[in-house]
Image (cartoon, rainbow, N blue to C red; front, top):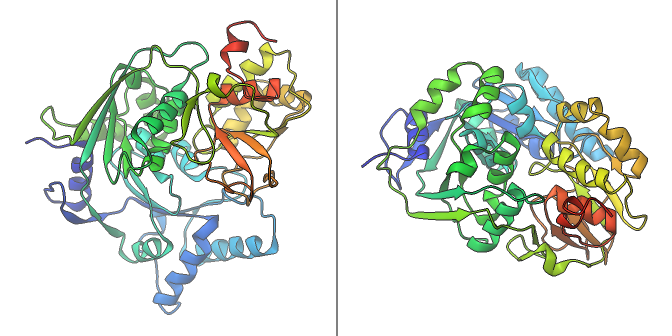
Length: 430
């Protein structure tokens, strides 16, 4: 019997042969913590080592400031200070402070992530790094602190689902729409503790941003990790950042032809239409056309799921075809994933046009994934967002959120009601 990708990754990390269901100790390539939770990790580490412990490898630990950046309260500022001081004491140099952006994206851009890596983090969407075939997973603060002692953590080897995707997206339809459809099809528990290999011609053509989008919401189907083997331009981009070692890594973790899969699903996106997750659950999915006309109060484009340059560019195209005008009745916020993304948008002249249209274009952060950010919704308001969760109260008690693609979100901002982006993209604007 052959091996799946996750089995090969865990064999590399554990140094022994594994099979599904085994519990194995794996060496960690990176153990990371964000500003939200990072202070508690540092305090716990000091507590269990009586303030005398040293981390196993300061060059394999990273802190990312992305949830509340810059700080909006004294409490948050003090927690961020705890992280900075801990990093200085321990000699940790990978501290990506408030001016960098979303942690997973920043790690990728700085060439710190390679296929086959095992990465821990304090974010439940660490698994978006599976878009380059890294096994990244969110864990609790105690697990992070413990991993800093000896650079290991234990896992159960999961079963693997295989999802094959073929076909080309129509104009106005994107990977986010496929993902939304998939969440609706499989449901919140459809990937329960599974590794998922995404493959097929549509995936092989997918850009890095599309792969990030796809893998970021495996969490919303209860999956452990989604994995996509880098190829083509994505592999070249990764090699330019992380080094030529990535080519050998890809070959080493490619699944065997006779690898065991618990389930194989096949999808064709050729006839797919824009989709939305309706309040108040990601798997409450309907086509955008069925909810078109619903009034909204706020639109947000960004997050670890859809905050890359390609996402902002897609929204920009919709705005351009609409004469660079948004509805005066809708508050519209765009948040780039990283400083690099923001700079690219600035160089292309997009930010100026967004601002002239009345859009609030913010610094790079996780932004409105929670009510802890500027722009939280008041009770009774309706929002549209490209984030990954829309549980009731997630961005404001008593508010409700629809999740959709950047194109659908911007079309909604333009018209003031939920709008199928094809109404603008395929008809030349208003």
